[in-house]
Image (cartoon, rainbow, N blue to C red; front, top):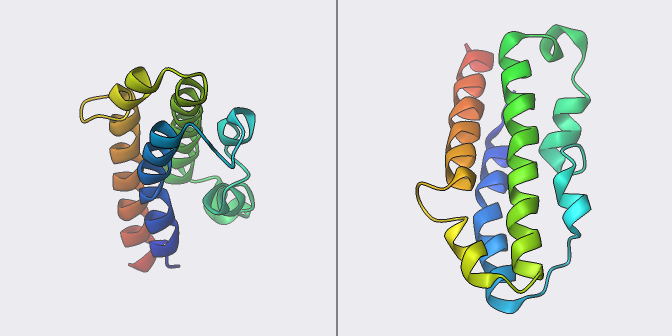
Length: 117
């Protein structure tokens, strides 16, 4: 199973949030971003059968993915609420957003390696 497209799509979130911070406009709602089963990876995760979906690795990724969406929604809410400087700081290196993003990407890459083995 190739997770590359999901890893790449996940990597685009920071760019999208930066664009919202810069413009104050978003095509997404805060509530839509907060839920973790509407993006392509979330649909994939929530659609896994019991063989893959009930593994410890899948559980870790589901939890990290859900936490990432909550944090991305928080950043979006700041940006849409006119708190651009605070939103910009919230996606800087060392922020909760960046930590969750990095951890999720690491887990996805690790899972892909396990699935390929």
